[in-house]
Structures are given as C-alpha cells and as structure tokens.
Amino acid sequence: MRGGTRTILLAAAMVVAILANGQHVAAQSSSADETKRPAKRLVPPRYPDLAKKLNLSGAVRIEVTIGPDGTVKHTRVLGGHPLLAASAEEAAQKSTFEPGPKETTEIIEFKF
Image (cartoon, rainbow, N blue to C red; front, side, top):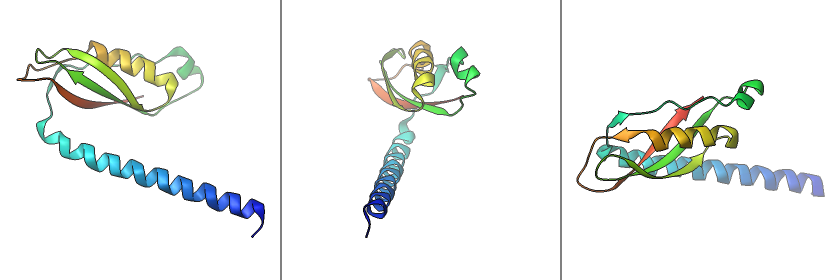
C-alpha cells in the first residue's frame, strides 16, 4: 500500500467512526424525550447577517438546563455551524418552559 492510499483509508475509517458515534448519541437522546418539558415560549433565533451573506443553513442543537420555575439556567452548544450557534444559544437563553418539580435538561434544535 502506498502512503496516499493508507491516508485515505485512515481518513475514511475516522469518518465512519464519527458518524457511528453520532448515531449512538441520537439513540440515547430519543429515550429522554419521554419526559420532555413543554416550552411555554420558544424564542426563534436571529439569522446572523454574515450567515445570510454566506448563504449558510443548517441545524444547531442546544442543551438547556431548565430550573423548576421554567427558566433556562444554563445552555451548551452540542452541534451546528459556529456562526449560527451563537444566535441559537441566545434564543435558547430567552426561551421559557412549563414549571416542573425539579431541574431538568432538554435538547432544542434550531433550523436555519
């Protein structure tokens, strides 16, 4: 095997491993949907001007920690283009959920 072929095979193996890992994460999060807290007000994200100019689109996944009173306490970007992620995270911070008995974690997906 030449060095170039070996590099291509290694890169292909890494892509397969990354994709397989992403499928595993999706399977885990779908089981958490059973106890999903309903959103009272889900704020739509602002589409950044630079993203418009670059014609960017896609989805951004945000993990939100919701307090018992329904307000968002903490956010974390799980995936998506960095140019879109800041706007999505800001929208998630401003969103509110139904009150619950304890602090919970949900995943919100914003599509641009």
